[in-house]
Image (tube, rainbow, N blue to C red; front, side, top):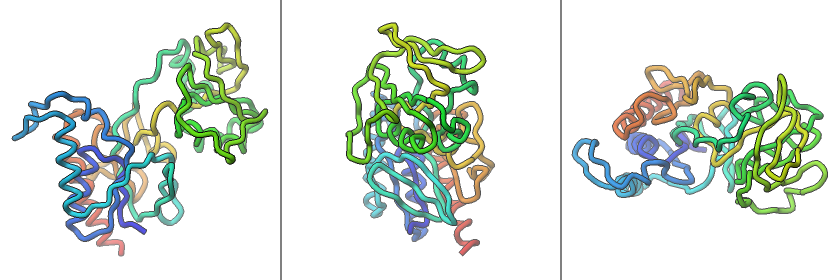
Length: 290
């Protein structure tokens, strides 16, 4: 078991790992990619450095590796709590006393007519949170990756039928024996034109003029963000950010967040500071609770 699992290997996550490792705690950093910073051609507003975003990320990761920080390139799918935190990835499960969420903010949703109109009216962002309300009903999951199939598999045991809608994108997950496509679980790769309903979602209209009748739509587009993961475990979120106190702790004891996912200034300097702050608070937390 780890003392700390850091989800996200951008500036916030790597910054936190340096402090935690130097405190002689067992830490692992898990992330699929390095986020938006990697796309920056040149960063000129960070003290003492003029480099590409990719080079800054590479330097940070190498610094952590030189301290022998364990870094795993895996996609985090969910987080649960059972005396300790259980983090599930596409490869395995990991257990820790504390967790730092540092994977940035949600990716922009595709423009689909009606998508914003039906938020909280049949559109959900968390299967674990809301599946109960759709018992025995027909629902759809929007997404084409491992996160989408993870949500669909969870819903499959609760609802009547699940249709994974890729919205014209190719499938990015493998059809394995544990993913049985049948009358209960289907995949539709047609592009979506509109979400239809009255007070709640009633159907999805595809661009070939066919409709799929549904009672709810779960969004699992791209990779699960820090906000998605926070919602799954019951931490308070607001306007696409995680609510934290002055110590970077969420509303869940032992769960911290740092970087873009906490809102405010979306800059490297803020992410590095919040990662360091979360780390030092966790060090004190574990010292006082062991």
